[in-house]
Image (cartoon, helix red, strand yellow):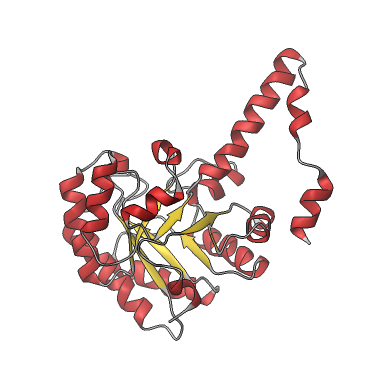
Length: 265
């Protein structure tokens, strides 16, 4: 088994820290993150673009390769819908991801640039093709199948559970249903598969603790773009204060540059 796979233990979730550039990846690794992930949204923000379908596969791969080179922990790619609708494209994306050194990727079932969900049969076929490609690699590779329809408002928990079971049977290594409507729904997702389940710590789930997620049986806790958006909140609130009111007090909370330097060396 690979180092990244070994981190995925139901009931003992590790934190997969989503970074958005080399500096944030190095800081998070220096602070103890056992693995790093890209974030499609946070990466898009660094390019001055919105989330969902505005970053090309080549750009995402180059960004991921930069993070792989910057840290000594496994890196996973948040690769949207696999950068294409057909199963063969998903398989190709898996192979290209392994070539740049990624330990795994996630593929969602939103038919980007529209966020409507693929029909379930096609969604499962896409994961089946990606899984076959992952098993054909010379290195261990964690394929995460995402059911994004609840988060995007296109299907309910019952449909999500059916997709979870389909993705499991198709060979996904880890299952991910971002932001179920309730904690009970999240528990249903975790109970629907023997595979490790990733939980997105965002929105109302940010008010839960690591121990609570462990008791639910989660195996992995990712941040998505949440941490990046914390920095955007700081930029927004601090800059608005000094640009509108001449109030620079927010800058007093800045982390000392020497402390940042020490995390980057």
